[in-house]
Length: 369
Image 1 (cartoon, rainbow, N blue to C red):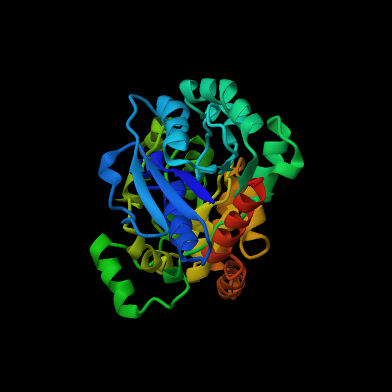
Image 2 (cartoon, rainbow, N blue to C red; image 1 turned 90 degrees about the vertical axis):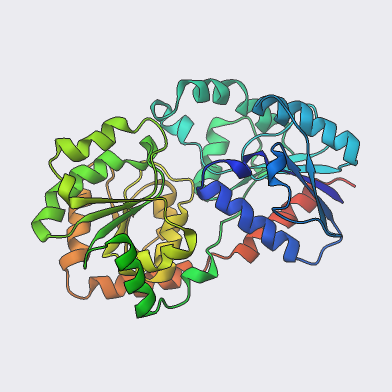
């Protein structure tokens, strides 16, 4: 089967979806299968990301806009390359491509909490996403939470929607040597103890709720908050809270941390605190658990699903609940050790190889030939 993979998003900002795509492609290519993959790019600078061989080929189709590329360029690629199926690891399909198409839904926070989206995105979601769902031969979701929301909000039959969990990189499973941890501590000026937030900042992440909770417990315990990530959108008011809550001296901003350095940062942290209002999966949760970093996260949606009973779950809309969870992990004898053990055991169930195998199986099922 000749499979086209839509990769317009590979030159977007670092984040979970781009990381997922890279790991998925690497593992798909490692599976012995008779299929040939065509990596479809909009940006010619991406050529060479996965050098051509007998299993896959990189192809550029230029377009003046994202939507033009998704709809017209991909349809042209189908005709020109003789593609028999198209797969998008992000979220769209070509409505004009006359072959089975599948896409991945990484979450529907813009339906669950539309106030947390940009107006142009809300318009796109209202007009285009239902059409993509009708067109798709299959939709892969990264959690059962995302699957439930697809069935609740989109016009699609349950037999076309399948959950395929993401994985975790092996670098997070190996012990982090002391000298490596101390090297990262020195590089980033990390204190002896700190709470960690890791990820982009936008409304669904509830960064403001985290800051309000942190003010209640962090300074009192003498434990700073370290933020590893970057601002995304609609987050200025939350960022401004750092000054308004008078915790400027307690919050350390690292920016986007190199992926290879994250294991040591997790290993140094008192806990990862990620009290999101919505997560479709939450890769940092699994990374932290794999390393042995305790997790404080939300008691709803996929945060609860992915962490299960291996972390401390809190009410993300109640800063005092978040604060109590943070205080428990920092002060309760024996709790941190039990969370580390449970987290590692839970993280062992997430595998990029399994993710690729189940994705390939879904692609094969969608092909009628």
